Image (cartoon, rainbow, N blue to C red; front, side, top):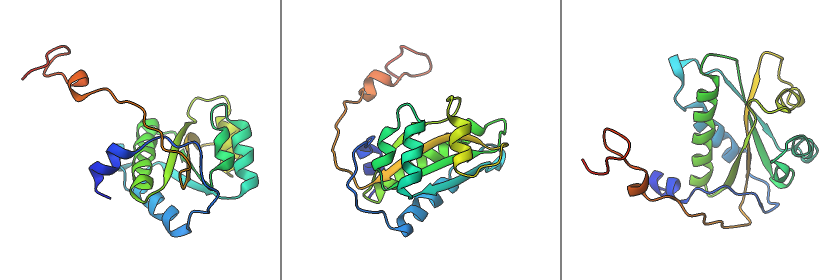
Length: 168
């Protein structure tokens, strides 16, 4: 799939078919995250791919808005060393993996982790030492829904030089 097609078609998927995602596709998705931009080339991230139904259920029970992780065939947990730009770096990796999943014909949904009350519990569940912080979780699988939320138009959000100037 063309990059811009993936950007245009990416949607948050919360309902998945039960079909397992091949390990090779999960590795491609994590590899895309590994290649995301990072401040000072710190690359502070670690990625834990969770396919065990029991662990995914535990993660889903711990989160407040990620209950669907239990039904996703895979979940990528994005952790980071607490660097100055951990949130930005981890978010760039997360967004890149969302696009990679779409490009591979998979559905995904970003679940917040950073600053959540459950962050340390999820990190510990994944075997992370105490110095790593949870940035996000990504549910991944074959979509069992086709949401089509409306997006604001380019004309509505594009401003030239200052907010409010619509023409160059």
